[in-house]
Image 1 (cartoon, rainbow, N blue to C red):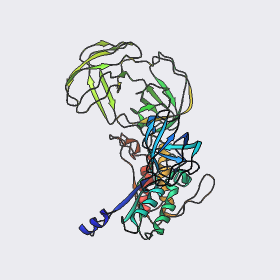
Image 2: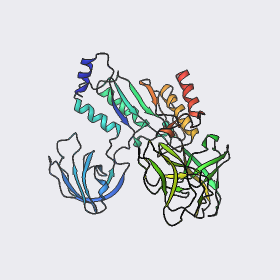
Image 3: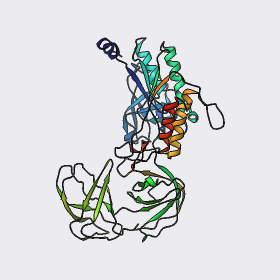
Image 4: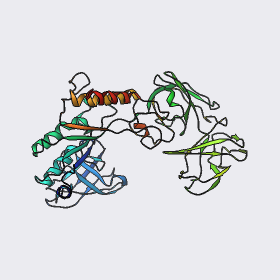
Length: 437
């Protein structure tokens, strides 16, 4: 708050963005439900103790929400003792707790240490006490995996924007714009099916209508480990299927950046494998890969780690133990794979980190189209849609996107690793040319 006048004094032409309000569930709608009890807390107390036998150590530094509103919104868990309970303090905007009545067997929620955007903005204005804080309010109203006009307000994203705008007006800032400094959606999910596959098989065919030529080389991640970690696509029948192979294995020991290596240690492989001299192997670790060439023949072990000699090189990145290794040495699945039907799997570039909530390329494009449609002309309420009025006060809009070709944000990209465009690029181009949907 104090920074704003200082910035404007130093440079009157400076344009200050503030807030950066990200999508986050409204209090009481997300997190983990626990059963708790507590003694009465006197008004003004700066900490309190809650008994909760379901507490775990990782609950610390989270937000506690009382379903009966006994604790003030934004109460923070500062200490969690497994099986015992919590120490809590008031939200940052209160000097002490109000008087809180004793309770027994009350349901509470523990959620992450993030505030819903409307809660944060309300408290920011209260603290500012009428002093300006920014020239425009920055927001990140993500909605994936749903379209903007179907997202419910409890998710603290798109549907919260009108409430944020009203808070701005209530605090005399109705003339200031809102900037969407992040909005978009990560791609990478495909719905697939596959048949029962023998342990001795070297490939598996995943059937799905969204198969794209650009998916070749992508890593396939199944939701519950149905396929070995590091499995990847070697061939694609566009619009029909993916051919997927298992990794050779995984490295057993970390590889340090800047340290010359002449061998690689492989964990026990699914079956014993003969790797000839001169074989190319690729170690995969987002956002990089390391290609090595074997300098001698070796047979791996299915029960112990194996040292594989490679041509000497000095890696320019580090690789942690467990990174998958790709290659073509006749590797098999090692265990039978059960059939699957209409299963959502993740498809990501080999050097791109997996991102939660990934969606199809078509849905990514639909979200981008509706972002601009909702802002410019609105979306009527109807079946499956909450609707969205036009928002002339919103702009500019920054899509959170990078190319899939390298970088940990690859799955957000509008361009695939091979340089071909995704449907979302056309949607964005159309919006930029027309100023609308």
